Image 1 (cartoon, rainbow, N blue to C red):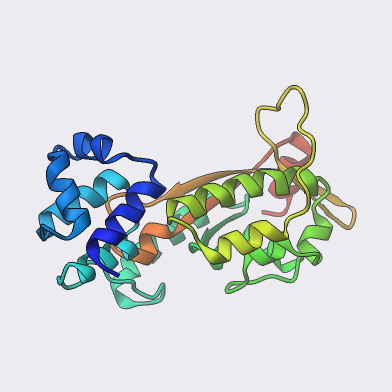
Image 2: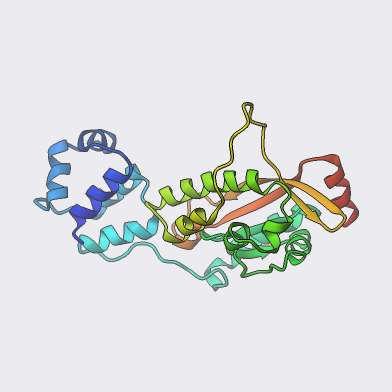
Amino acid sequence: MSFGILLRDWRTRRRHSQMSLALEAEISTRHLCCLETGKSKPSREMIARLSDTLNIPRSHRNELLSAAGFASAYSEREWDSEDLSVIRDAVTLMLDNHDPFPAFALDRHWTLLQLNKSAHHLVGALSLSVGSSMLDAISTDGPVAQAIENLEEVQAHMRTRLQAESAKYGGDAILDAARAKLGPVAQSPSVQPAMVPVIFKLGDLRLSLFTVLASFSSVEDIALADMKVELMFPADESTKAILNAGA
C-alpha cells in the first residue's frame, strides 16, 4: 500500500480533515494533499511530524516509513532480552514495593509478563501464571470470570477500555475479538460510582480491588511502548486486612 493511502487512512481514523491535520502539523493543505495523492514524496522528518500529530503507534510508523522507501525506525524487543534488563529491574522494584497488594506487568494483549508475590497468590488461585492472557481469562467463562462477583460491571468497563485501546492502534483484531465475546451491555445506574472495583470471591475470601495503570514514557521500542503495569489496591478495609495478613 502506498504512503499516501496509508496517511489518508490514518487521517480518517483520527477524524481529521485535510485542513485540520495540516493546521495542527503546521504544513500547507496543498502539501498534505500532494503527499496523499503521491505527487510529493515525504521526508523522514515529515513522516515523524505527521505521525506525532496523528498519534500513530510505532509499529504503524514503520509501515509508513517502509511505504515511503525508508528503513524502519522502531524495533520490537522480547521482554526477556538483554536490552530490557534495566527496564525489567525497574518493573521488579515497582512490583515488589507494592506487596502485599497485587501488581503485574502486561503486554499489549494483556499477557502476564511479570508478577509480584501477592499477584502470584491471586492469579495462581485462578489457574493463571506468567504467560497467561488476562484478556481471555476475563472474556471467557473460566475460573477468573466465575470468581468475579460483579462480572457485569467489570465487563462493562472492560468493553470501554478495549474499545479505547483498539482505537489507539487504529483497530486491533485480538482486542476487538475479546470485546465481542463479552456479554450484553448492562443498564447503567443513574448515578455512577467513583470507581468500580473487581470483587473476587475465592472460597471464603472476598477481595475488592481497584486498579491504577502505569506506563513508560519517552520509549521508542514497540513492545515497551505498549506495556503497562497494573497496581491493585484494596477497595475496602476488609480486603486491606486480608492482604496485609498474608504479607
